Image 1: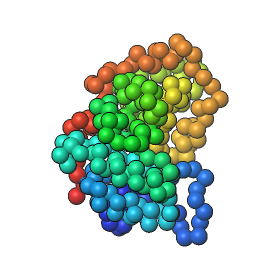
Image 2: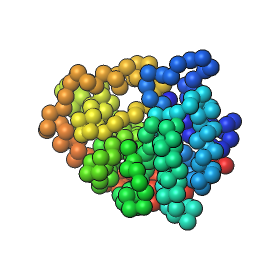
Image 3: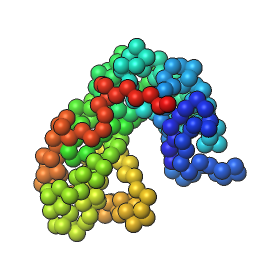
Image 4: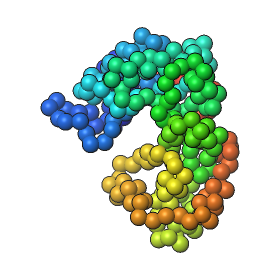
Length: 238
């Protein structure tokens, strides 16, 4: 389950919202604050709209979706402090960030009180994002990899295909297992039941050190990044 918060309930995009009378799901729902609502009062209204749309009185995890350092005079710390309010009053069990680079995290460490529980970042074999992951490990910030298979681009890579054939697994299973073994939380997206089932079946095998290293060597650095760069991304939704 996820939603992207806006200040208007009609504009909150919600998947698997909880109908009236239904219990909370067995998995933890979370939501992300979009770039248009970073000013403190806007963030508060957006969060209220998210809870209303989900028909819940609290959410398990709430994230700032992007730092947008070129917007709001570069002030994402005030936005973060509003999230700290949500955690303090119990309406957000945990709070975190998404697409934050090391300097963004360092600024939060210097100016805020709560360490993000998680940083959701682009990470996959073509873009390991190792500097951000290393900072997270050092400061107890979990890494969640979005686009863990690089929007499918790594699935035809000869190295990945070779390892998959040796293990009798699909390339997607191999890449997702690589993430798990290196400590990433993964969030693969699929609407195909067969692929969803395959994505789940990654806990009954392991990659040896040689396979892990072979996949790690596919890292292309910044040229492997598929999404926007957090230092320059400044999209505001209409």
